[in-house]
Length: 83
Image 1 (spheres, one colour):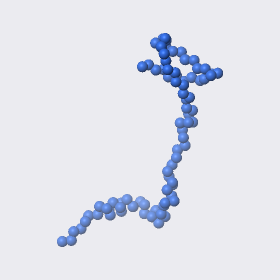
Image 2 (cartoon, one colour):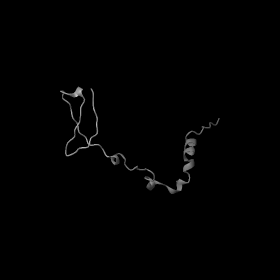
Image 3 (cartoon, rainbow, N blue to C red):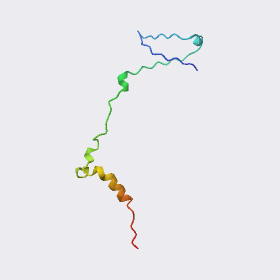
Image 4 (cartoon, rainbow, N blue to C red):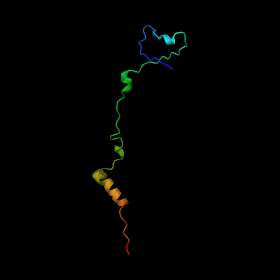
């Protein structure tokens, strides 16, 4: 299936499309869609930075840099067996 895609400006309610000879005498489907404006593609970037600040515990903020290491060492600490 051969397709042609062209962008045209509607002037006085009309669009004129010149088709190649292979389309002559055939039925064709015409679909008209508005082209999105450039500003529709760009949406302001949203950030999650600070969205959970109401749940912060100020007392624990100072320990954040070492929290992961402490959690892992507690979970995987070797078990000592007393014989």
